[in-house]
Image 1 (tube, rainbow, N blue to C red):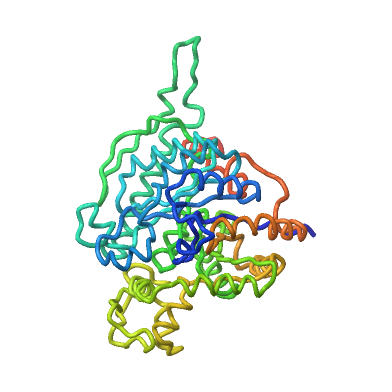
Image 2 (cartoon, rainbow, N blue to C red):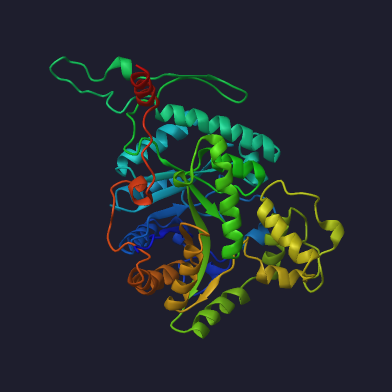
Amino acid sequence: MTKKKMLLAVMASGAGSHIAAWLHPQTNSSAGVSIESHMAMAQLAERGLFHMYFVADTPAARTTKLDVYSRMPMFMNQLEPLTLLSALAVTTKHIGLGGTVSASFYEPYNLARQFASIDHISHGRVAWNIVTSANDYAAQNFGLDKLPPHGDRYRRAEEFTDIVMKLWDSWEDDAFVRDRATGRFFDPAKQHVVDHEGAYFKIHGALNIERSPQGRPVIIQAGASDAGMDFAAKIAEVIFGANETPAESKVFYDQLKSRLPKFGRGPDDVRLLAGMPVIIGESEQEAEDKYQTLQALIHPDVGRARLSMDLEADLSGLPIDQPIPEELIPPSANFHKKFYDNIVAMIRVEKLTLREIYLRYERGRRTLRGTPVQIADALEEWHGSGACDGFMMMFPMMQDGLTHFVEGVVPELQRRGLLRSEQDGVTLRDTLGISRPAHPATLTAASHQAAE
């Protein structure tokens, strides 16, 4: 029996996904703003037959607690995703290109036009990761004192996304006839104007670019809350998961798939990529040594700050070798519920000290450490159990990790029949096995014909 092939994406993480990666002498501390580094990593991933190179983002720099953030420069110095993806679109040929843009702080028309343009530039390889943002630094860049409540952000994102989808369908696939004989560039009957007035947006117009090669870019989402999972079930085609075990991931995936029917969708309409940080060594001990070297570089102020951010509590004055007091735990999460729940469990159930928590806490994931064969074993277990369709690979040291993965793990996965051995599609939808959406007008016409 032919095994189902796994999907692979890689998180573009500058020096690396580990919070202290930039301190390691074997990393490039300027990689986040180096187009040469991004080009090299995207091309390396493409040679390794990865399906997507993904860029995370937040539209903000931190403006307070700079002494701490100077030691933890997450999102403090990096290229804007759409600009970066445009450059990578012409320096790669096959790999998909995903980027994060917040629905909380963009206008639908601008976003729809930019992603449609990159889909044309890349010949159909772009994906949009929809987020609602998760820090007040971003809110303050756009006229707000703090982020709106979680539910409000998702309601705005739903309306935003609905408009973007309609704008991507401004024209039918064959609208631009370019008929020199008749002197007509497009068929006026095949334009579909978006006329929308809702709670958050008022728009009347159409994109000034033809329908893109994929019909519309692939939609990515990573919500873990009830609102987030409903949103993902309604519109997402690729979902990022953040679970520590295959069993937890399968439960999450099954819950997500159970929500699909109420939105008229089925299991074949979505793909789950499990977040998977890995460190690879020639021996298990070498991989463990790499990990512990990085862990030892975490400054206590950084440990406190990371937990403060995701617990949504100020832990800055606490001694690191004592438990986090119960009274400091907020009643609920407004930003990342999954991360909040993870920390609260370590406080209440495992009774860990602050230091023990920050040395273990990995935002809902667990870094795999081992040889290429051991890493392949773990990925096969996750994939074979139905816990996911593939992985969002995260490398604590970007260049070291991706190089060892492409040179060691990829051939092992191919030997087992778990990973494709050659490029197998033109567009990102082709390689993910996700169908190209028909234009709504085509569906309407087909239903009329069937009725006749």
